[in-house]
Image 1 (cartoon, rainbow, N blue to C red):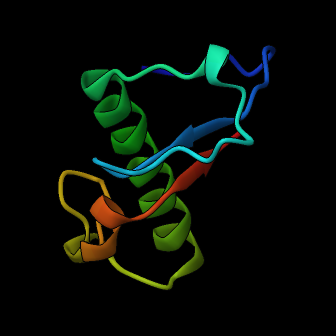
Image 2: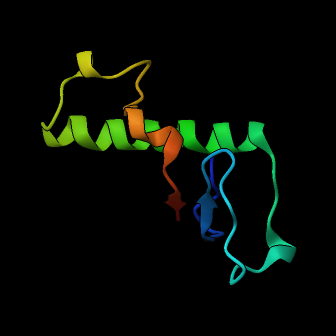
Length: 80
């Protein structure tokens, strides 16, 4: 799922089972596990590409072009 570069928005991806802060606008919160997985996969691809181009890692450290770290499943992610 590619984000349209013309339409910018912020997307918070919460880890499974996370408690959503009361300060969030709950009218705009969606729980869609499949969509969350798609967004996170795209974030992994972007991160992997950036790290590889920068020389911080090589292609052997990517999984299908994705840079995945253990703490991703427990972390909040902000996508722009």
